[in-house]
Length: 275
Image 1: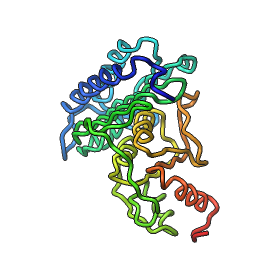
Image 2: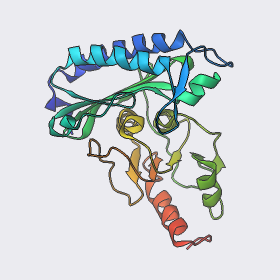
Image 3: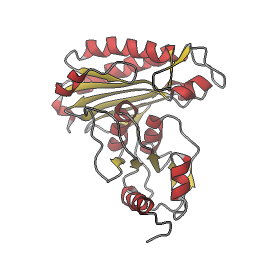
């Protein structure tokens, strides 16, 4: 979808970027590099952790983003879902801290993620990782940047020797018939995708149960950098569905999309040798 569907998109990207920088500062105040965060922490109903930093960033962004585009609905990890979003053209999709556990443990691999959907497709995306001093921005049809510099996915065309990130069980299964370089775990799904976008790694695997807020902003950054995120059937990732949960996903620089899909099919078939 072209960014011209929202005439103020370029100006909005700048304003949203500034809001994400401020949100990152809120989180950084409670972050301790290499040590346990000082933020108060508790468990959500599903058992996953949440901190006062998550809630503070979420509250700040909801106020700020709603002012920037009042007609947009809201979908966030830390806000009770409102089904009215399904009838809205524009939807903000927010993960106040993607990689909460990393944040809590003092790892820098966490990010503030904001995407704007237009009829279910991301047209604006920002992934701001303040502890890594990295801010990714993308506008549909306008390319992707890292700290203001244009980025492109890698040119790797073969899984042999490719740098691939993902859950260890998935990488171990893939390693039965492909010789690749397994990358150390990246706890933030958004950063896993943006590091494919900037060429740091070549591909990534994502296990089932990722949510819209984990993916939407980074998906746009990746696609605008020449990469691709797809579901386990090689189809596009659809956002703002009634249940915003996804199955297994495959991310790559684009050139590895087909060989990765073939590998996934072999895993499903139970084959451990090349066809």
